[in-house]
Image (cartoon, rainbow, N blue to C red; front, side):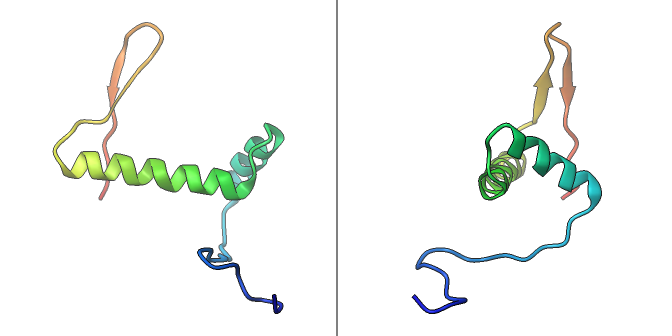
Length: 75
């Protein structure tokens, strides 16, 4: 395959990230999760949350003590 040509079905991205995002990616990489997989998971989660929010669902987190926090999205 010629250089700079991506395999079919893939898109190569070049992005600028801040130091906080870099640290998150490094933390996941130490756990054996590639940067590519981390980004895939993050995009999938964002898509799920946005679709649910747009359909009228509330997004909540429940902690160990059953305390509930509702996420507020800025869309």
